[in-house]
Structures are given as C-alpha cells and as structure tokens.
Length: 269
Image (cartoon, rainbow, N blue to C red; front, side, top):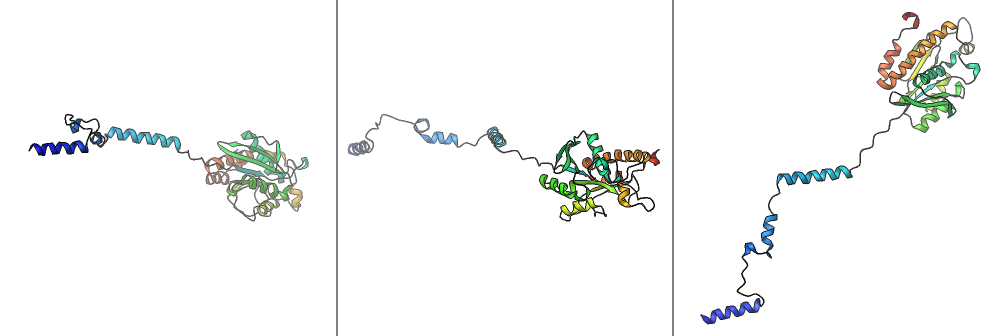
C-alpha cells in the first residue's frame, strides 16, 4: 500500500513537477479557468441590449447612406412667333410676340437678353421654371432658334408651348391644343421641321380673323389693329396669361377648359 502511494506521487512529480499537492484551486473559483467566464458570456443578451445595438446600427447606416437625389425639374419653353423690327410691331402677325410680352410683364421676367437668335428670358411661374423666347429670324425661320433652345436645355416637347396668330379663328378668340399640324402657318411649319417632323407639342392659337373682301392675306396679317380691336386683344392677352398659369401649375386639361370655353369681351360687358 505504501509502495502504491509512493509510486503515484512519483508519477505526479514527473508529469507535473511544478505543482504541489498542497495547492488546491476549486474549479468554479479558479481565476485561470476560462470556462467560468465562457459560461457567463454565453448567456443570452437582454432585450434592451438588442434594441440599443440595433439602434446604433441604424444610426450608423443613416450617416453612411447617401440621400437620394431629387429629380431635376425640366423648364417650360414658351415661344411667341412674329417678325422682328419696328415696322412689324402691333401687327396681326405678331400677336405671338405680344402674348409673350404680356406673360413676361405679368410674371416679372426680363426679356432683355438675346440668345439662340431670340429675345430670351428666364424666370418662374409659381414654382415652375420657365423660359420665354421671341425668335428674331423672321417668321419663316422660327424653327432654328426654337430647335436650338430645346436641344440645348433638353426640354421635352410636351413642355414647349408655341403661341401664334391664326387666320381661321375669329378675332381675339383663343384655342389651346395639345398637338397638331402647322395649318398653313409658315412659322409652325419651320418649328415642326426642326422637331424632325414631330407635332407632339402644345400650341396656343390666337384668332386674327379673315381679311375683308378681296384683301391679300399678306397685307392683312401685316396690318395694325384698330382702337376697338386693340381693346379686345388686350383682354385676350389677360386671359392668355391666366391660361398659361393654369397650364403650368394645374395641367393641360384645366387650361384647355379655361381657354376653349372663355367668352369674348363683348359678351362680358
């Protein structure tokens, strides 16, 4: 028996020469034992810990994630057709010019600059960016400056409003249409050609009536207005300004209803 105890002690001394039998470290209190620590770490985290961790991740993601870019709003282009030069001021063929001037004055948009071979101005109607243009290339070549502006600013054709005189409408009567042909108007023909044949753009037609008797059409469209006609036309321009505001701020359908059901001045007096 003594021999067995002696042998066991000897073996222990050989395997663990630095460990003395007098030292005892209970397992659950040992500072060198990782199992106790591992047991404590393996406990499930509390709900508050999970919430705090998730909140911190969300906050970090909100700081890192870029904000989505707002889509840039395309401007409207409003074009009035006419002929440049003082000799054409106040004539029937230049009502497009006068309508644009009325819009510019009402909305506080300067038309003093010349760009793209046109009198040109930028501004806002409400919160909608708008460009106003009066081509200075003479009526038959109106498409050149209009096409250049549309191409440079990448304006969708549905946001290009062309205003021009129309022989087929009674004097001072307006019509707003979403698209259509040139109707024999050389300025509109030129614009459609520069739009590669596309007719998909709105237009505001202003009636100037038919020439009386056998008067030549060219002479008639270059004829100035009488005093009574000027009063009626100024009233039409007021309606046209309001129609453009409705078009840009509320949409085509409401604007067309306003324009196409409007009563002439003599019916309101």
